[in-house]
Structure formats: C-alpha cells, structure tokens
Length: 294
Ligand code: OAD
Image 1 (cartoon, rainbow, N blue to C red):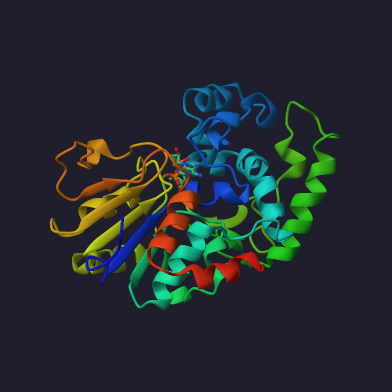
Image 2: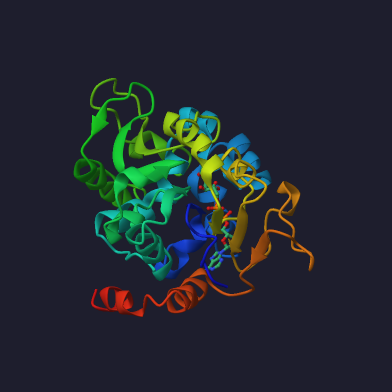
C-alpha cells in the first residue's frame, strides 16, 4: 500500500480504535465501554436499568442525562480523571496524521474521538474537526455555563469517596455535580450526547470532502451517523482505505470484494501496525525518532 500519486488531497475519519493502543478502551469491542456498562451499579431506577441493558448507549443519551446525570459521569469518570492526569499518549496512528500534515497532504482530520490525543502531536487545531466534541472543556448542558476542567475533576474525584457512603437507592442525589450558575446537576465535558446536535463545524466542513482523492478511515465501526456519512461525501473517484482490524461499513457501500475498484482494507492488524508500515513505505522513518523520544 502506498500513498504515492493518489494522496495529494487526503481526508481522514478516525474513531476510538486509533486510541486503544494508548490504553483507552473503544466502545463496541469486547471489554469496550458499552460492554462493561453496569446499570445495576450506576442507577437506582428500574426503568433506566432496563433501557441500558437493552441498549448500553442509553448511558450517553440526552434524555437519560437530563433525567439523571450520574450514570454518564460514572462511566466517564476513569476517562475524565485519566485525561486530567495526562495518562495517555498519542499513538503511531495519531502521529501518522501529523506527518501527513507536514507533507502538505492532509486536508482535514474528522475525529469522533473526544480524548484530544490528536493535539499532542502538534497537529494544527484548525485541521481537526471534533465531530463528537471534546473532553477538554466542561460546561453545563442546560445553561451553557463553563466550569474550569480542574474544578470539575476535583468534584469528580471527590465523588469516588461519596459513592460508597450514599444511599444505594439514590446514589445520584448526593454525587451529581451542580452547575455554578443554574444549580442544575447538568455539568459535563463538552461531548456530544446521542439526541443532541453535532457541532456546526461538522456540517460546515463536510463539503470539503468533495476535493478528496484519498480517504483514510481508521479505528471506527462506522455505525454512528452522521459521522459515518463522511465515507459517502467523497467523490466516486476517491480511494477509501479502511484501517481497522475488522471489515466495517459494508452497509454504507464499502466494497471488500476482490474486484473492489476503490476500497482497500488494511487486514486484521492494529491501526498502529498499519500506520507504522505506511510510515516505512513512505520513507518517513526519520520521523519515527520523534515518537520514540517521547
Ligand atoms: P467503536 O467502538 O464503535 O469502533 C471501534 C472500531 O475500531 C471497531 O471496529 C474495532 O474493531 C476497531 N478497533 C479497536 N481497536 C483497534 C486497533 N487497535 N486497531 C484496529 N482496529 C481497532 O468506536 P467508534 O467507531 O469510534 O459517540 O464509535 C463511534 C461513536 O460511538 C463514538 O464517537 C461515540 C460512540 O457512541 C458518542 O458518544 C456520541
């Protein structure tokens, strides 16, 4: 696989699979966030437990959050605190995007990830569209009042102790975080909940995909829309390279047949293995030193 002539105008769509190499679980794999949701531990409400068992994504739904913010905060807690402690480092996959930018090939990175690892490489923030928001800023989902990330983390950390003290029938009553302005317990990182609108920027940037001659799709199951629509916004002449350990997106028209004209699959390898190979094929080995020195 080479990016040779084709990759003059490269667009990228990434998902949680580019960050699993850093130690952050994805959503839908075995051991991922939705696989490990424990409704019995995070909500006292029978109805909420039932809904979450039927569909674990309920834990990050808007309706659920407005009824009871606690389950969202509880499943996100390790992630919020890990981010605060700068526990995770950008992977080879993240660095590959930075190298593409340095080569003048990267036109835009659409990331569904909220972890902000892309920015650790020094990639230009203006080249990155955070399709599902970002964890780095915190605000009230109700009134929009911002809260400093450090203050928020202090309260999230304090709740770890509280949760063992509170009434198991209503844990959320004493552990939700009140908004400093409207006092409602709706404070959370600026990530998109199911049922909320995507950032305007996603819709503003999507037309740029018309210039793509190569689309890299990395570490995403391609099941969440409208983010997954990116694969069909590129011209029909655009090559689509799926870097994922499983074949995804068949229902969106990605063609894994042997006579596929423009779709290529990386095979059952990790994203990092594929991007490392690409780095070598592109002759960018000297850049690897930057990663290894970190
Ligand atoms: P998923 O968990 O749905 O998909 C991750 C994909 O990456 C799967 O196909 C995995 O097999 C693959 N994968 C995981 N680790 C890998 C690795 N090291 N190498 C190669 N492939 C790997 O995550 P997303 O597609 O990002 O939205 O999920 C999309 C959205 O669903 C998220 O942004 C989030 C979630 O609900 C919201 O919360 C709004």
